[in-house]
Amino acid sequence: MNAEDTARTGLVTAADIRAAGDRIAPYVRRTPLLRLPGERLWVKPENRQPTRSFKVRGAVNAVGRLAGHGVRHVIAQSSGNHAQAIAYAAAEQGLRATVVLPDTAPELKVRAARRLGAEVVIVPPALREEACLALADRFGATVVGSDAFDVIAGHGSAGAEILPDLPDAGAVLVPVCNGGLLAGIAVAVKAADPAIRVIGVEPELAADGVASFRSGTRTAWPVELTYRTRADGLRAPVLGALAWEHINRYVDDMVTVTEDAIDAAADLLRRELGERAEPSGAVATAAYLTHHARLPPGPVVAILSGGNVAISTEPRKEPLARST
Image 1 (cartoon, rainbow, N blue to C red):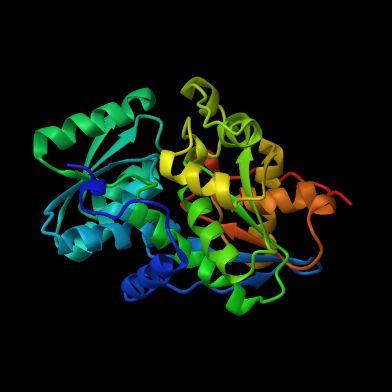
Image 2: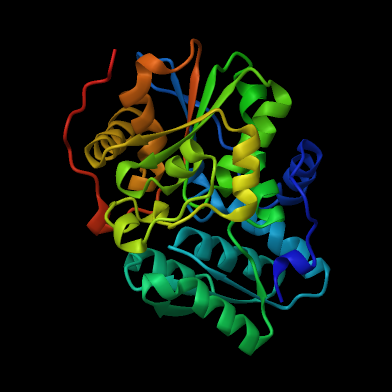
């Protein structure tokens, strides 16, 4: 059984996002905007969420709705953060959770999913989707995809919080994995002010989304390419189909950043703001540092999407000059 069997279809709207925000309010934190000293950059620290990433927004919304429809067992495949969020949401609703993780997932994320009560299945990266669907069929569980309708709506709640805090924002920079976060934030931001530019950010080594955006066609990269980046949360080989529909309609641009830029951004966030960012969570700040001169005038918001930092992905302390 798929989440789409009980969720709505079509594109997510601002009304869907408002409803999701109300639904998840008891379980998530309304994160602030933090000004980077000396810059026009404001950081939204989603690493402060209960599972240390934005993923909890979409998971709580989707799992809560499924529980209301009588679903008792949910399953998801993930690089790590979506798995933790599903485990957290299932525990809050009293549901059974199974998560499929790649054998490259940081142990920190594997342990966290188990600690939250999920049954964890480890497979090679290329088999994540196949294993998830097979287990769903075997267990009679409902798959919660990371770009399902209700997941995108939940993620959009982060975007809905930006304009009330920073009405004159000129651009919002959003990390991209399968695109669910970018899709939700784009809907929310464009509904509030269509003039604000929404820009997706990927590592150069996992730029399937940028390739899709440039060509106008959803494009997949093999996992042996996307798994080169240290940003383990951004290694999905292709944008989700539903996320792509939103991105194609609402997103203004997509850019890439280098591994060194990601590391430098994570170090900067820790030094200047005291915020712990995993490499995946630092890419939006890296985009500001790298592409500053080409961003529109006015304040810029970067989504710090997660702070589940494993020892193997601690950022190196290397300086990076901001482009001017």
